[in-house]
Length: 614
Image 1 (cartoon, rainbow, N blue to C red):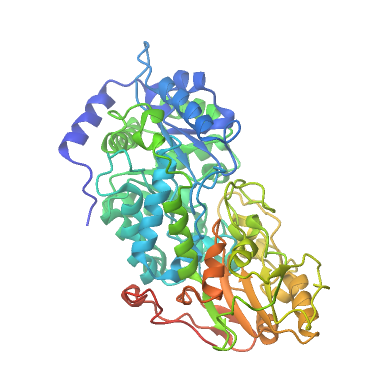
Image 2 (image 1 turned 120 degrees about the vertical axis):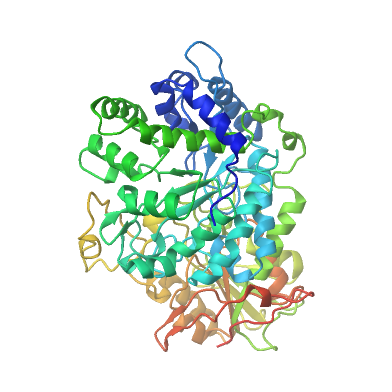
């Protein structure tokens, strides 16, 4: 079913404006720049259509006022009615895949891998809604989400951005995600424009190599990866981002069959397609040729953080020589204008005058309570009988492990910085897992010793050990055996491929992070029962850790509200998370992911109707 946001009034306004625009103005609308490389005068001079803050990019002291001042300046420059200016408002975009991650005062929700385990589309939609409100309160009107990736290989560094490895389940969530961001009325002050990503097959690359090659038949690609995008188009998503990955060797950014014939013509997508960051740079060794490939494939706006001025120059040359047609340019700009009109940008006040600015929505109690509830519902009990879990708050507890008191680690990537951070100082008002435990259990104490030397069976009834991964994002989070050249995985890709050092060589946690099994062994050797909490952006082989633990909990990447973990392990809220990915194990190859049915997620009391026990 084609999207329906494009009515006759919107199309008429877009065509009228398009007819009045110069070529320079049209090319400017197709250009998205990064705030650090483009000044206010550049936006006015080159008629820039959009500005973004890349992951980890923020103005000044990263305060709300700094954000509003910055976006206001760009907005004023874009609507200038000076001669030769078209007066078209900019879109300001950010990655906000688990809350407004660039902003230090934001509510940081669990990453999508954790949200998928809740099996609650209503909860997930509320999180999208809360994120949209916090974005608008800092002047941002465009979010690069939701991510509709179906992560088929957990070695992929973006696995935590996926809700599940089951296509049907992700498809069932899609409408809630889009409406959560955009609302039913996209032109309302509370709405942000959504951008479904990455079209298409980013989660299906060979061996989980980020930006690699998805080798599937056309039927398999539709069944496994394209299905959620039909739901997104039906929900009137206004923008879609092309995937950096390739399909059978052809980069998606250069694939006219996928972007134009399928997405725009067959699926009826009336919004516009955005490139990924520098996505066309890898189409060819010759950037001039890459520009033409990207435009002619069907991409409408280009995320060009560095060489945007060269992109604009080359666009003029291509149009002059006929290698890009004015018909293609007009189609792209018409789509961009239609989205801006539909979203009410031409009628909206200056960003700082949005009514949400003064409502103290950023990091508010309502949003933090929502995030805490999401953490509670995402936790999965893998092991632990009733006499082990939940824990008696009066117990004498030793808390250990590198992730017990580290807000950065529990938030993961895309938090303040692209690759995340380590420590407890970067986010305002966040709570570590240890702080959540401390608030409930008066007899708990923490040790930061690598082998928990303080563990004493005469002083401690049990230990809670919080282990797992450290923050990462995108290709720097890939797991790849360095004995095999990455070229083995991407050898048939047309164009360039950027080889990035991976996070590690194995998904076996005892080898990936030997410090974790070491501290568990040290405590168990003293006869103290161990409850293990795994903080991770993907399923890992935890056979050894599981065997030594009396209780084992998958905590995913819970975000800023560590109290949610404590609420569940102490029995204030029951375990209800459902395994949403197949799980690697040396014992049984994999634990299969149960078939997920969102209608069976929780009952009225919030308790689980289905969870995995092994």
